[in-house]
Length: 365
Image (cartoon, rainbow, N blue to C red; front, side, top):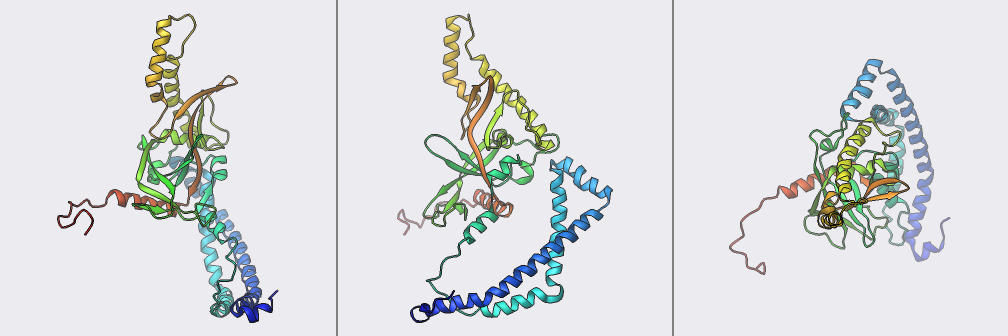
């Protein structure tokens, strides 16, 4: 519907709605044709995957995956995505049908009808946000590995603070033996903060918030180095919390490399738990020993579990003990944007440090 009232009171708005009405049938045809191309390309890509020899499939899907710690179906999807991209591009240009529709629409869409009275695109922000970020429901419920761009929260009673992991992807990769090569003892987490203006040495994380009105920035000089084995605990829990059940088993269906990783982490954290158990009072021990244990626990007990950024506690419920940290994985920035942040971080570290300028006064004149 195009209100005729706009013709006298807002002619530009009338022209804009008229233009959209004219474009609507061509948009429908463009989407229909694109949908056909996507479906045809998917079929061809699946056929090309089918034609890959068993020798190459074993090498690509299983041998390489075993060496690198990948999930084997991911390699098949990677092959299919490559074939689909190539076929979509070929079919899109084949015959010129899409270009003919686009050229026709371009002539109409290019007519200047900018108007401040138009409603803002309703779902554009949400769609762009969906492209840039993976939600915690997906990455945590499927026990996806810790990766560059993972977003963590320090959860507690008073505040929730966000951090983003900025470590080289290959260094973070857990190999088939459950280890990183070399093993990373600590990894950098940069603070992510809301701000009205850009802080010094920072990069914006666009579309992080559900509302365009609130902006978030990564503070590239506010970086904490956290134990990698602590963040790894988030992988094993569907709620994304860094938690390990003492003497527990790895979740079912988890990737082989991370099943091996669970065993390594269990042995690591169980050693810390056994040290804490030494400080637990036992029946019939001398009162002086109990007091000494309590004094040691007050003075040094937190060192067994607490980290620079996150604090841990040993909790027992229903006969099951678990080591839990106030750390939770809540999302993931897309690979391309995360690599850009990593480059900005390394550039900040490598910035030149010149001697103080003699000619500059304290007020900057």
